[in-house]
Length: 441
Image 1: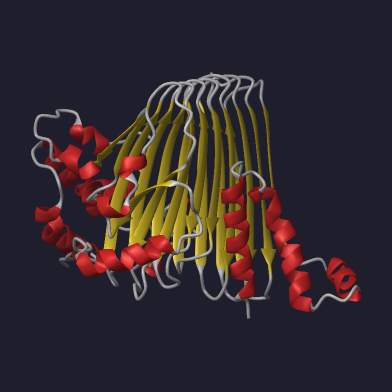
Image 2: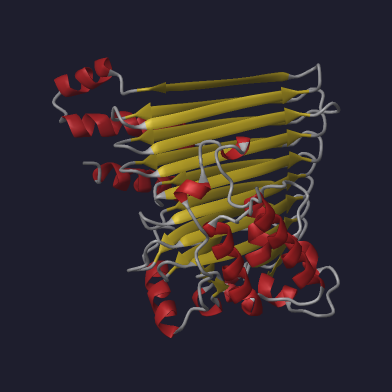
């Protein structure tokens, strides 16, 4: 009997989307070759599914089904809607760099107010520079073989490419704002940031929707390098439309004696996956990585962290909190790899989930892979409901049930939010949590 192998409909649709978008993607020559190879890898493997260990809780073949068509370049009407979204942002006093539907929007960005020692280019302009022999390297990475990173390399239309000189201490945060204005379309962005030795940088990312943008997809990658002795703070705020999908990747390399503090808050998107790959490339680096998922209705939020301790004398701490209501589903996967040369590593990870309904679900999977013998490593995971005795205590003192619950939930996520060093950004995260609590049924 002859058997014909037929590609899944989603794979065929993705191939058609790539073919249709190819003429609109920046770059030629070697850039095109890298894109073709990246898409061939994606086409071979397809969307990740539950049989892929790293994606076992987030089956994109079921949840995403297919990759949406590439968003068109924003017109004047789209830029006007994006401007309204920028004006409504809670985060102020930052240097905003705005990406609209995957394209850099200079007129909405604070390019003129970039501080001395900061160099800005766009990904598009570098990829289209014919005499730049290294331009294709911006689409390559050896940090992960993840198939969604390959798809991002194939389809990336734009992003910001930043360089911060040695010793520069920025007074204002750099704020990359991702705005979706089109429904049923996908944006693909890739940004790269190189932070010099001894520099001090606060980087903020916001993901928001313009009015009437629905059922869109965000595919983003951020690749950053921190030089020796740098001090880097990274804050992500995901408030996409409630029926949107957000698949984001961060790839971070830390130099010697680097201080890296990261916080991610997800309260939007029907489907979200944030995966971070952090590599300790220099001794005595310290990383504190914190996050909060606030999920309700049928939202699905996945946070997957992979920390590679490559060298000795490095410390890492991970603190993650999830608050899950209704029929939402939170996923946390944290893996710490301690390589043979990484003696004297001190790495700890703790994840806690708070379930507010009987149908809420949380999957926590902390992992340690240790190949060195002189280390201190540990992990823990808990899942539970609000403490009835504390609720009774607060209600006995006159607080209504919803207010009592909100107070306990704010305390639960507070430990992770306290890691945000910038007071304004910390208050923004707290205000976002308060808005989420106010909309609970």
